[in-house]
Length: 105
Picture 1 (tube, rainbow, N blue to C red):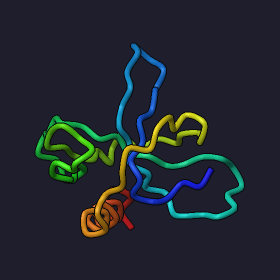
Picture 2: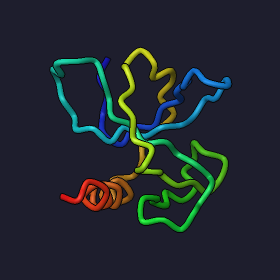
Picture 3: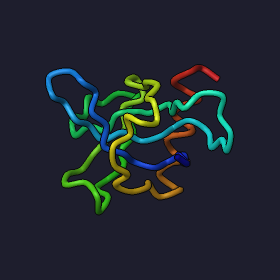
């Protein structure tokens, strides 16, 4: 399975039947040592935090949404249920810049 940075997937997180949309933030890697992708959840809740990046209302989402960088988790490839779309490169550049803030790089 080829996973690309900026792709958005439906992910079943396994608790309370919660299925979320998540964006892949880990780097593209043709031959990763583990079948894991670092992903950040997408939410419609905005708390005016520097960890939340507006992604607008992409055609594959119903509402104006945000990427919550405080919620980054490692997701196994087989848990990425359905690819629903990909964020525009300009939007993902904003996410990359915010990752520098998030990890104090």
